[in-house]
Length: 468
Image (cartoon, rainbow, N blue to C red; front, side, top):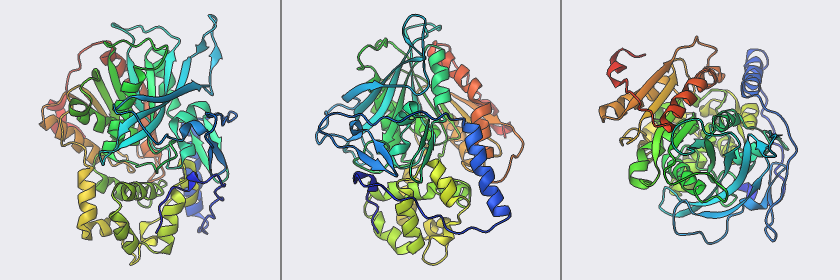
């Protein structure tokens, strides 16, 4: 089975053939999931641009041209967080200000060096936005390093591209920049923002290593480092840094918070927001299996097989032809594609013997070891953390997210735990996962701006025994 990145070819990827689906309730659930995702994430379509450095040929992923900027060079700088290249990034949603500056700010596309989970150098792309608004808090202008929620595995899904094109539609692909809302809210408060694309999402030399805690944590911390070197930034060495993310981004910010003391002690971390963090992937995969976001199983398997090539033999042995085809197909998909193509798919359709993915993991020690290594909560964050989880979240399960708060509290971390109490809004159709993202965002941003102003956070670990 080949998991090579198909976007490296400049030929167009064909639109995936959607497998036949039962009519009635199943079709209705699929439509609900698609509509909910589109409405909740609220995107606006803008024209695409494919400009890149001369002499570097752009690639095409599912009909979407990836700017040549995203092709990494063969040699990278030695220091983590070092800039490889930059260029102006036109924001898809912006207005001219009265003083001539663009609102909400001026964006720069970035490529910077990071270190992957195997200890090797990796080029990561992203974006830095210098806000037009003045910082209203105390101290110098702060920086928010934002880790996006699940976007997919195709290069066309990169968060930095979504800042330029909030809605991307290609040949069998749909990508929506839903985290742009949080980006713009921080810019309006006067905080600078740097967004990471993660390893391999955007950069065309490898697959995105979806939910790999080390790759994501390093990429986020190195984005904060890279932001300090952007030309024209108003950041200072004393600028406080906040890590912010929900869902996949919540796992990335949580992992970065744990890794910061050892990996990036030079990052002046003031606080971390980890919303719906996938801290225990063994449990999270059970929630994703059969859900509207079932395609994410393909992204995680593809990513781990790239990080550890010895897993490919295990994957080959346990997948049937449909499973192998799904892994190849999902490797260039965005969230919209995955919902339309694989919503509510049961992993038993992909396995050689009809076992569920959870059953396969249970009998394969190597897979159990890989997932155990991805567990977040074994290290203590040095800075305050706000962890939020919806009590009815059935995609990124509530119990495993709550356990992360318990684990951190047990290590003496400063944790503000927020159980988001909402009614059950529908089983496995993303609503129970997306609703807390929207309803908690204002409180999360207020908590973060307080940390960026230097205000102390009061832990509520004492309340965990009575918290849902």
